[in-house]
Length: 468
Image 1 (cartoon, rainbow, N blue to C red):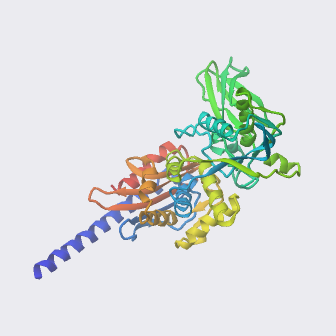
Image 2 (cartoon, rainbow, N blue to C red):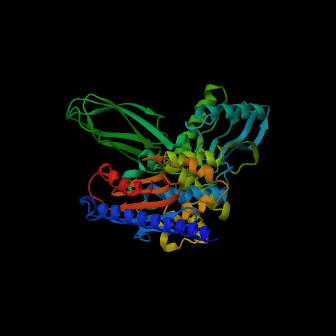
Image 3 (cartoon, rainbow, N blue to C red):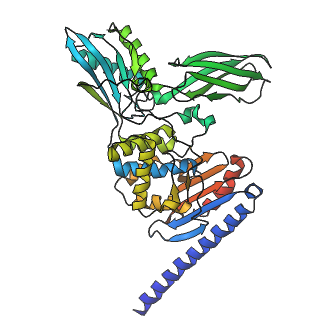
């Protein structure tokens, strides 16, 4: 018995000394980071916990609220797993209002969306634009529709009218990562603009726009800079806007491509379907209409009287993989709206985010620790504490879908963690297994640092490397 007592005392002492040593080393590296010139005007929130017990290992201003950028995506992803389920699928419904007579639909052909952000996405086998088009043609054939004496309606009104969350910066919204989320999305709401710089000081020629923008004119205000200079092109557009423009300076004599966001994805899909049907000798006597355009005019949106087919998205766990690995903001907004639609029959950002925050309050994260304006973290008006991120990651570890969530996290510096980057903000939140077999959960958020993020990264990594 005495030998057992001595052994237990030795083990407890060893664990205690290890914890103290880890805390001391984290403190030393944190102080080194704080004393760096890049941190002179910066704010830091850092929290590290033991994964097994949840106990605090070390913190520095762990409850301070800071802009988390895309590290906020962990809250949306976990809530989506919990509220919607790992096998949840978004849906898009094909149907009509009217009657089919001798192969002619006398009425309105309707595509009604429920927020699928993957419709026509290139990321998933079987869900690419050509896959959806082939499915739609097959559905029409099975329904016996060979012509439409009426309109084609793309109905995005199941979700809220405003596709972009409040607080998104204007200079982000025109870029691919600032694409809004509609009730109907198409090809991740992205457009590729190819161009070539001419002679220094001269104009820039746009060589291709893919796809051709529906309902909007692209205004080219780019100029050519010196050969070898940086590409400083910028794309500006807003939801429903009839004008998109690209400006800035691009290097002389080079071919480049910028990816922006579509101003009207439902109309884009409608025109693509119209061309598809014409190419397959399925003629429509009317025009392409969208639910949003009808609402703007104060007109009623035709309601589907007969469903033909329902198209499902990939399962949620597959979408979360790309949401976290590739940091697709569109997916975060779609998850938020889907949660709002399911829980409150309201597919708006406001109601979806409110439901996510309500969920986290139920898990013990106070409202003061988590202020969400969107589902993706793009808005600089978001703020969160490092403590809240750690608490969310600890919660995930005890859930049945944890492996799917963990595998979706990117790897940086040989560590599984979600990053976050917006102007003057850098953040990481994730898990680290140490050489002695312990697993730690951590979050580190820095706002208002000076200089380049690339020079800041190794300084942040020095802190996190202590956990290895």
